[in-house]
Image (cartoon, rainbow, N blue to C red; front, side, top):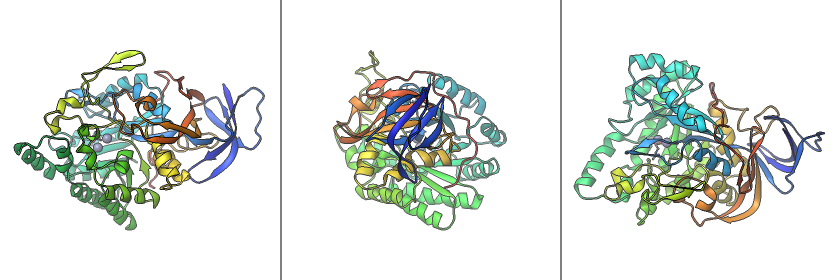
Length: 470
Ligand code: URP
Ligand code: ZN
Ligand code: ZN
């Protein structure tokens, strides 16, 4: 099946220009003016923008947590991503005691139902000599990224020695360490003290995870990367001070890169004080308006390279079903922690919101340019994670992952548009101007206005090689 998209305005990471796009099979074959093809189906994109499909480098589908699991799986989350203009996602594999191969196989099984293209990062939450020797096998599987944690003591955290060791192994194997930066040694006693004092409300989730821990941990990881002569990628940056530390490190030539997420650009700890504050519980937590502003500045001036989502949704009230694809479903969620903030599953929905919200409140609001929007949400993640130019690019030879935007479409955004399999949306009622109209995955139309044309199982696993350091 060939498709000729005529008269659109293409937005790439560096340019905006009018052109036609010819898709032959699964790839873009030509970009230019007045293109013709004898049999291609013609799509008129007059008055519309065209971007590469979004690349979300940070999702958690079907992630077990606190006796439940994140409520979007590798089909429902992919479908939501597609409706929001994202055609590639990267999910984090839980490290099982049986080893990397076993862990990856489990995640591969879960992702059999994939509806868009996907790849994996490996959580590195234990490290011994055997595992250290086995890390290069992940690169052979096309998984060239390891996520380490400086928090969640006794569960996910690696000590600094382990992180330094992982960085050096990653360096020697064309891999990249991604870091969750908080200070677990500070967080654990603060949580214990808060609970002992009877502080159980969602606000205390933020109060026990101070921004300073994120700030010093970001600098610590950047410093360790420099000493390991390795790159590092700081995930879900949330505190303005983290952007300051990243800037400090990058100005000194450290190969440090950073990602933030929509929630850290729009919300604050005040949202956790609301009666429905559990909706905003994720780790790291929401900060302040000053932090929001500093992160926007960091995106605009190039200190941060990507915007992912850390999509990890839970129902606010998993005792009450929602209707999803015609069937009722309820999945235990944030109600598990109604009397204790430490039992509220950490995470929130965002994968479908990312592009429409950033288009309206980033590009239209003048905080970032349209080209930065594409760079931050598609091209840079593809480059950093070894998928460029197959993904994140509108160039001949690239996968035909293409989004046609109706930049004039105005909607009152919320669950009616986001397609996440959960019972709330953080942007409920926000006015959005500009929505994906048509979304193509490798040349196949999977979203057409409000219609879902995609299917479980059509997403492909993307084996990744070494990425670029931006
Ligand atoms: O609260 C969050 N972010 N849940 C997902 C796990 C993580 O640390 O990214
Ligand atoms: Zn994390
Ligand atoms: Zn995450």
